[in-house]
Amino acid sequence: MDRTLGRAPLYLPLALALVALAFFAVLFDNGALLTPFFGDASYAANYLHELFHDGRHLLAAPCH
Image (cartoon, rainbow, N blue to C red; front, top):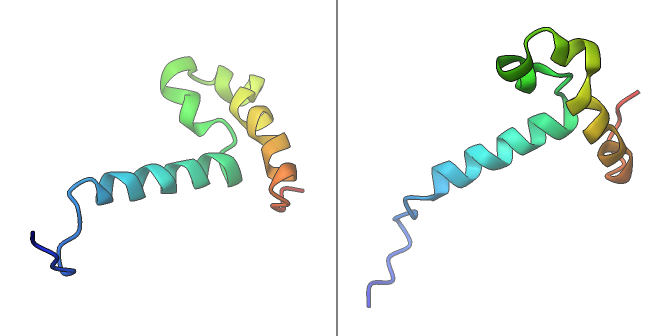
C-alpha cells in the first residue's frame, strides 16, 4: 500500500477545471457558454444568465 502524499490523482486537474467552469457559469456568464450552440440568440434570450441568476441570489453572490 503506497501512501505517498506527493502524487495527485490524475482526475484532479479535470475536477478543478469543472469547478472553475461551474464558478464562471454561475457568477460571471451572460450567455457566452451557449454562443457555440445558439449563436447571438444566446445573448438576446439570455437563458443561461437567467437560469443562474436565482442561484446567485441563493448563494448570496453579488450580481447587481
